[in-house]
Image 1 (cartoon, rainbow, N blue to C red):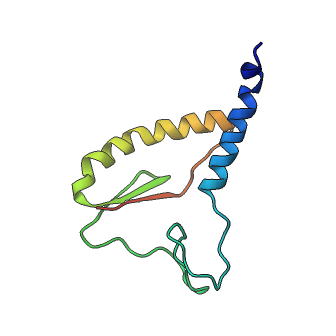
Image 2: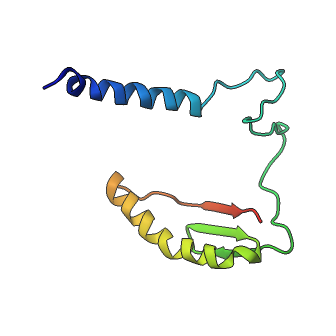
Image 3: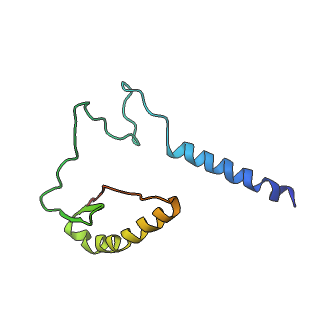
Length: 108
């Protein structure tokens, strides 16, 4: 086996580790200014998820619920059609039931 062939797994691992570190930057201190990739800060007493805008539609399939603008209806129907199959594939992969209580909101 060539030197490149022997080092390929370590190159792949190093690349994956680099991507993971870039994808999840260190959390900011509570008093630090927000960075573009930070989630908004919520008050400690903030609870729940805001209501959908009045013009949005909602479709509930038991374990997954979609909230979406009417313009996205066709795309949501396609997602909903494949969601149960994806959930079953993941359950088979992990050997247990997965994804209960999922809410997906699609912006206009």
